Structures are given as C-alpha cells and as structure tokens.
Image 1 (cartoon, one colour):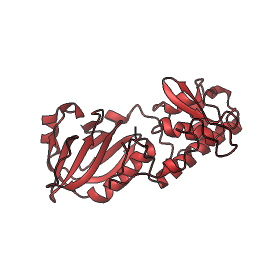
Image 2 (cartoon, helix red, strand yellow):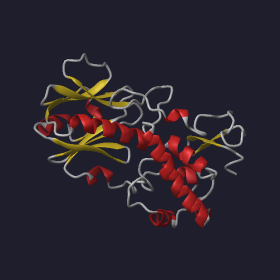
Image 3 (cartoon, one colour):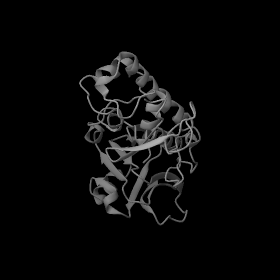
Image 4 (cartoon, helix red, strand yellow):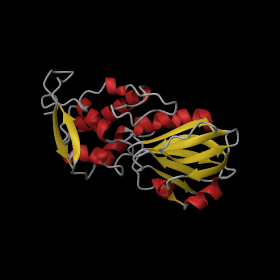
Length: 271
C-alpha cells in the first residue's frame, strides 16, 4: 500500500498539473470506488469545481477545491494520472474526472480497494488521524507527549494511523532499524534518549523516501503521477531483505509476524 512518501510524491505531481483546473463532470465505472457521496451525487456536485491545490493528509491524496474537498485513498493498487481525454481507457480505470481543458484525471485500481470521497469538510474523513510526522510544528516534545501512556509494541504503534498519520509496513520497519529499536519493544520501555532517537528516525527516513520519490516494489503497484517508479527500494535497510546481510553489521536480516504484518529487522543492531 502506498504510504506517506508515495502519496506525497503523487500529490506533488498532481498539483503541478491540476492547480487552477476545473472539473466538468465525472464517470464512475466501479460504483464501490466512491465511498461518499453516491456516484450520481458526486457527478452532480463535482461539476464546475476548481482545484485550488493538491496535497496530502496521512495516506489520502487531498484535492482542495473552491468548495469542499475531493479525497482519494489509493489503498493497495490505486493510481492517479492526468491524461488527454482521448487516450484509450485502461481496463482497470474505476473513475474519470473531465477537466475544462480537455484532459482527464483518471483513477486506476487493479484490486478495487481504493476509495474516493467528496466532502464539504476535510475532517469528515481525516478527523481520526494522528499528527503529520513531517509537519514543521511537530516537535520532539510533541512526540514524547504522544508516547505518554502508550504500552504497545513499537511496530504496531507506528502502524496505528491514530497515533501518527502516514506510516505503513515498509517505513515502520525502516524507522525502527534507523533507531536501532526492536519491533517488539514496548513503547513504555523507551528511555528519553530512545524516544528522541525514534523521533529523529521517523523524520529522517520519511524525508529521504520523499526525496527518492517513494518505494516501488516488484509488483509495481506504485508509480508516481507521471508513471515513474520511486527509487527508495534501492536504499531499504531491512524491509524485504530477509536472509540478506545487514548493511551495518553483516548479520542476516530476520523476519517475524507482528499483528499479522510481516516485519523485518536486524537481530544484532536491534536487540
């Protein structure tokens, strides 16, 4: 599933193409793609709305409109792209949005898990989300306050979108390696120095991944708004590297399952 770096990369690419454009109409080819409102109502309400900007909240691509917000959650295999309206459709296209300049915004989703929302207030969808870990005003003290009273395993905590918004399986593993913390460590066992190390690892790993355009795995489910692969898969320290030598100490990377999620770590660097 695309995580914060991938969604951020997609949003930045779409902003370049769509800021100032107006929607004319929409077509929905898989009704369940539209979570809110009903597809017919979305078609009626999207007409004439101007895109002020395209950004991100958690794992949602957020289109800030002159009235309301269009949100897209890419889930496992969703992709967004702006193409000429006459371009032949992809068989996995689930929704299209016609623009006033003859282009289309298309949502392609092979596995059909992605969802589209048109709402008046952003918080209708994003209210449960925790803070943005890369926000300028997200400080170490804020992070320590978030950890207060948390007793769960670190891997599970990092995946909790109500704790922090945007991290998923890839970057939770990478963050814990960068912080030299075992994924089974309990949050309430961290020292002050370890809390600081974890905060810094979260920000540095996500910043590097955004700079690399995200991570494209062999299934190629993630491509950016221009159809390009990310490059962070060439830098991962532990994710997907079971049995391969740790890049720091040479110890084979191990894998375990935590809460049903595959988890990779170095047993020496992350004791």
